[in-house]
Image (cartoon, rainbow, N blue to C red; front, side):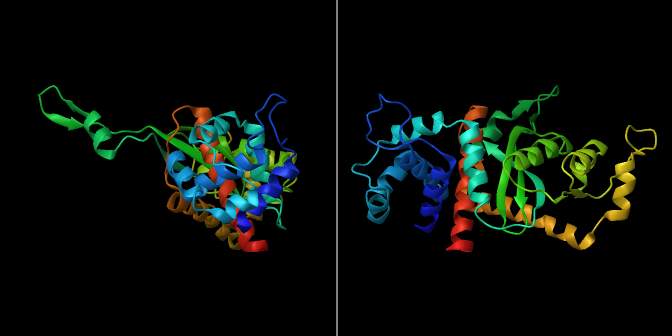
Amino acid sequence: MRAVEHIVRGAKRLGVPLYSNACSKHAFTQHQLLVLVVLRQRLAKSYREFVDWLEVMTALRRRLRLRALPHFTTLHKFSLRLDERTLDGLVATLASSTASDGVLAVDSTGMQSGSASFYFVQTLSLRRDDAGTMELRRHKRHIKLTLAVDVDTQMIVSLLTSPGPGPDFEHLRPAVAKAASGGFAVTAVLADRGYDSESNRRFVVQELGAETHIPLRKIYRNASGHGGKFRHRQERVFDHSLYRRRVLAETVNSVIKRTMSSTALARRERSQYAELALRAAAHNARRAAELLG
């Protein structure tokens, strides 16, 4: 219930209108539906199961002033209407409710896409080779989720999704830029050597006025950016004690997978982003309830 209170406050601070348009039936407000779709992700229930749970969650219905139970299609259609701006704003608003030193840790993880069973995927992966022997092809398709996490509070400040697999370094700049545009005062960025690039360091140092703590990769001397001044500068300013806190981003990834599933059931990229952003909001609401009460 404390997490629900933080979601309601976040929706109000974000300026979400009570109704999407004047012709709405006014049966449910957008604040009520937003709380419900976030809570559904927190409980890791399907839309049908969650509506069944609402029947016995009298304290929640009383707090939200629900005069009736929404149909599961109402929640589903509302989640499809949520745009990226609203989702990112809710995540950032919940993260900003606690004080921070501005240290961001960036990390990526893979999320399974679709609801097909492991047996079904393995069966589709079978094929015959030239000799007529059955062999198993590797199934590589997944969703790559990149999180920018405040190491002081373990709040998710921003997130990105992309088709996986793929390189990590190209996701650091958009993730950190989204966190900065959302009002997070970045003072340092922590990431593993998969995010090492001269352009990433230049962006953080020159454009944000922050510092990077990213280990240097071994690259060939004739490679582009091998002798960049920001890579050489990193050797002087690298803080090993601060870099150890980078693992907290991996901890947040693990928490989301263990408590809210490692599978995104949506099929379209936009819907997949909405599903994972709602999980990020659910995580932030839980952390705000633990830290602030």
